[in-house]
Amino acid sequence: MTTPSYNLIHEPGAAPIKLWTRGVPLEPQAEAQLRNIARLPVVGPHVAVMPDVHLGIGATVGSVVPTRGAIIPAAVGVDIGCGMIATRTSLIAGDLPDDLGPLRRRIEAEVPHGRRPGRHDPGAHATPPEASVAAWRELDPGFRRIVERHPKLKGANHLNHLGTLGSGNHFIEVCLDEAERVWLMLHSGSRGIGNAIGTLFIELARQDMRIHWANLPDRDLAYFTEGSRHFDDYVFAVGWAQDFARRNRQLMMQAVVRALRKEVRKRFTVDEHAVNCHHNYVQRETHFGESLFVTRKGAVSAREGELGIIPGSMGARSFIVRGRGNADSLHSCSHGAGRVMSRGEAKRRITLAQHREATAHVECRKDADVVDESPAAYKPIDQVMAAQADLVEIVHTLRQVVCVKG
Image 1 (cartoon, rainbow, N blue to C red):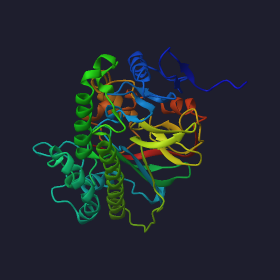
Image 2 (cartoon, rainbow, N blue to C red; image 1 turned 45 degrees about the vertical axis):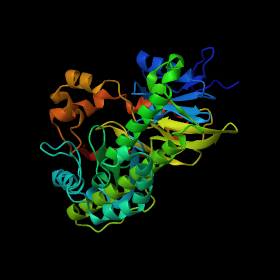
Image 3 (cartoon, helix red, strand yellow; image 1 turned 180 degrees about the horizontal axis):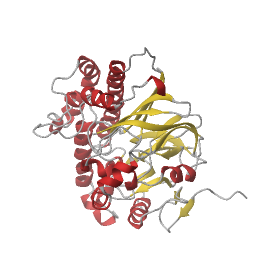
């Protein structure tokens, strides 16, 4: 009999938890959070846990939570549709300029990002470019439908954030693969409008379940059941935000390609088949013969033959992967390396000298404001990849040479 590649937690009265965490740390608080979500009566047939797992808000980051006839808005979270896009160019390493500083600054100029002092809306377009306006025309009817039902969302930022990066762990990178070919990669989601939608519906779920709070292991695990008054509204709104996030990444990738063309003299082409995948989302799927709502909270779909992206931390390697279609993992894999330090802890423990040494090979920011994103704040990506060898196969290994942080 083959030994499973995962560890198992199965408490009486709770869904089993299958964990691909061998060889990587699992913090006690994250395990406790996983046990809470497994106790919900709507969760099943089991929870799958990826090797980048760590404590999250609402639900554990790196978890795949299937639910029967219900969705937990806080498990999806407020960074709805957050994910990755990567594309390969026809350039090779020798085609890049020797000094990559101007290329990083060009990307920073082309893509609004980060927290800008004195700006009411940091990281937003002052005047949205035509590409963003055109994309919004297609998104606008859905937004109007959402606002008609939930007027509180009318003033939420949307158009000005379309085609912008944000801050925190969102990033843009220029990478080289094992054959020294140049790749472009970025990480972002639905920005302000996704945050507003997530926040609104998390609160609505709490309000709807106040009478049942005694039975909830955590108030953040309030859920909508099919047929309840807000369920259909949430399904539509979260699907719309996921579409916004996907288009947001596409628009930014176009801007990054423009930046590269301005800094590289050689003419080049870009692979039109970019990998564009969410890792914070919910959708209906069939597993073990059941129609389920599957929430991937920091996890990537990895059906057989499906391409995905697993980025390492700032300065570490990243991977383009192909799913193996592992049924036990609910056809999923990790979405990155996974934090081992909170942002506050990282800023206390990691010195600026350590950060500069860890990112010496990358053209990126070396200041104190990005120390919380330094490689030491994350699990070693090689250990994470080894723990999920039966979930994905590695297609390309990428190393960063330029990194723009939000």
